Length: 274
Image (tube, rainbow, N blue to C red; front, side, top):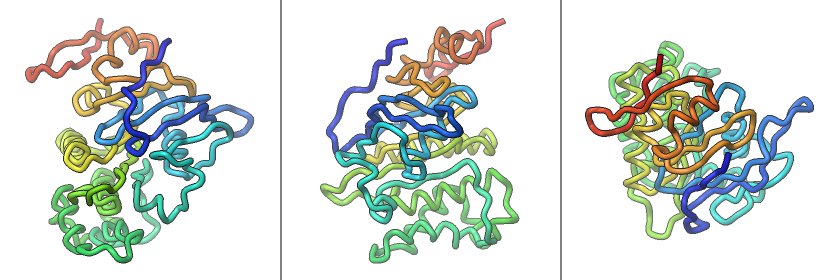
């Protein structure tokens, strides 16, 4: 299938992969992959189980070193960036939100401040993140006592603090990035929509980039600007979400028949076909 990437933007406002490849146990998990992600936009990374979605996020977050190819991080080779500097530019919310220590909620959120030892206003930043994620009433609870969905919201709040997502960005500062791996998996319906609406609003208001792995195609249609679809480690399609996510692609990649309908607010949604 042909891949139509998003329109090219300034190098300092985008992340691009060039021939990116990651392997393990003699198997290629991802790639070769050429893809681009634009700041100020939400990109949904989609695909069946084992398609390479989490592997891609691992490479973008510098947790996994590429076996081939490179990642251009806003004009610089990602592998050349020091970890401390990168921690001020991007935050990752992983699938596994369990904590080895029973922090109180506000203490875990405060960990987002660690990469910024001299940044002013940290206490206010933490409180704003707690409020934005609906965690005010849980701020003094132990994280071990929370449900999986509540922990996911705590880690999102920590990530928002880390990249200053609720701040007005300083003039000339490079965009920050949120990397989210199935952030809605443990959330109820209300909080799925609240979380994705929040990160979309942050992208539009602060200019940060959001790259999120999702399984729910209807959530991607509603909240993502762009979509990258992976299957067996390769890109099937990339482009505007509402152009990419269509019944023909769903049938080819997921082996599921569906039809597209317009929701009450005109947002396209997919319904299973008989």
